[in-house]
Length: 392
Image (cartoon, rainbow, N blue to C red):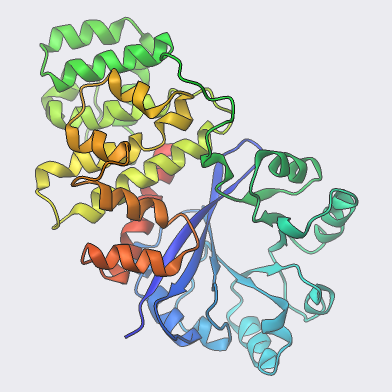
């Protein structure tokens, strides 16, 4: 049986916010368009609702009319290359697309002019940044905007990201922001970050509620952010939390520690902080979800925190060692974050590798944890929905 795994990639706007997600299909063996449609159909019940767009790239799988044999969600955009529209089965595929009328994204290639004349309407047009020359980029973007919203794929550094935006390209799909800046040095946490760590450590040590409240009151913005996160859609509480003491009563220290951890993730001043935070939140919920049934339930929150903290070095501009030195974290979390193995490491490895294009590696790591392709894909979509809700 051929399994199909999804990898994910954010689509960023000019404010460095993840406004959409690009999903790429990877088959563990030979697969056709019908198999891809079946895999996607099995995810419809967990497909994130709302206006957030999900681009679907068939990867190396063949794309033809059978690719439409599933109830394509309204917020899904199918990526197409010219060859799929102009080949031997192109006419059949174009007719099927005109019948179903899903949102489409046409990838620019040598035959793009012919594909644009196929009679299909495109919501997006995608450029490959690896083939873009700075000269004439603005003119090209302006020309393509006559046919759809222009996005750039394969943007691998901040300079190309800026060049694309300066040229009028609307958004880019990329993970370039995960790389720490060349200027990142070993430096101490700033006062705001240190205060968050202090509160976290108090909660982890089960300090008296009054002592934790006093620490929170030293930073009004910190208290506000904490209550905002707890009352967010991603938390899913049935009542509104009015105070820290109320939060302790409803949640307890163990759960509160998980949500306090989010405050540290949001303490970044990096220009790419919105994208980094969305990625960290996705990793956090993905790891937590993947752990269900595989680790003791008491470990779920620690899996979440491991994922949330996995990008702290980039987010805060300090080394991971510096962050961990100041925190009272379980050894298993520290081991995973420092690349030293342990119980949580396989989950973090899988969460990270699913941000790339190495389908076989995703399948191998998922297999090592005993995860099916469907359960892994479902967990990813649920994690993305969580991160989207928290980012609102």
